[in-house]
Image (tube, rainbow over all chains, first blue to last red):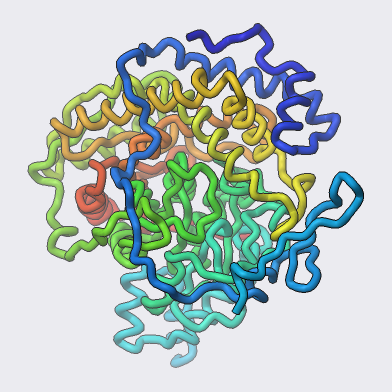
Length: 116
Length: 461
């Protein structure tokens, strides 16, 4: 299959769309610069098309390990205070999330996972 | 007279390798307190200009190691050189840190690097570039820039770095130290801030090959927290390390000596290989036919895995929000999100994974006939600061000889082997999967007869 969908791989519209998918705020300067920079890299990686891989199985992992499990034993783990120690916003041992779409406040509750 | 004798001793203290330091401590030639005092004095004197450390532990008690700031350290700030993690203090230690602590090592400081280990020059740090001690106007290499410079400038006894596409070996080469990327799965990644999870490996950065072998012995081995980590610990006896090169077959891939390799670097590398022949190795030319596609495969696989790993930075559980992410990291998130998005996965990630399989097979075929593979670490020596900052593709091309080892999961060693225009050059020695022993053995034999690893930069800052 051919990689190229169009000549300019990532136009400014596409850049904005991808940034939205990635939840990535871009500056206007980045929106200017990225179409060319990213398209150049995509053009470079498209040389992969020259390689015949019709009878090749993909390699995703090179450690040769599979189905590794460890002994299911209760051990030390972070307590609630430690687990929340880096949270920018917290209230009553809960992580505060951004505002909900209805304007209410959301929380992640950690109790139960980290309760001492 | 007594005083001046002590001064000379103190001056040399920070030049000692890890192995020598351990011996000297055992012989009570100096105390741990003196050792730390000397290192901290040097750090105070030289770090402001070299910018190797982001955080310094003024109260260090044990043998001082420098740790790349992508490795989590309990109670010690860990930023990954990013604004996103400014102020982040991990509540737990990485497995490698636990292993070092068990062996009498402690952390003298956390080292600068490219943001989230993405970059090959050390310039992508949110806290300013690391400078090369051999020439303050040159890059130090990256991404483990601060760890390399801390070792090269004698600001620590040894360091840990991480290598996803050459980030231990390339800065080691640019600063004239030893850098080892172990086989994927040899060292636990638990606590390492993930970049590209199918490629990341933590490795030693040291003043000698012997030191690299010892540190690998300490940090390797099974870990219930990383299921890719194998259960056989790396161990090497002095006898095995000192076995020499005689009888080994050395492969020289013709693809590693082609267009793009600086002729002066090529000469240094060829001289080093000649030395290995003098030591009794037999060289043959080999081919790794798919290596020309390695970089393309790498720059699909890495951004894809990056975009997935970076999704955790939401500013809710820890860290700052996504506004604070730096340029190169943003570029990779964009590329990865694009190539993993609906309709493109087959074309990009799956295609790259198939090419990766072919690259791995190239090595398996080559290693049926040779014991090790040698070549340059980097096509050039360290370049000027700022030179490649606005041209990401050119920057990526400088990783051309190191990334294949990560794609194939095999170990690679960078050993100092001379200089070009006054800047260090590293010889890369690649081995079979899980065979760190042979590459260390060759590196050890080489450094014993050449002594390049003893060369120090003149720090007249």
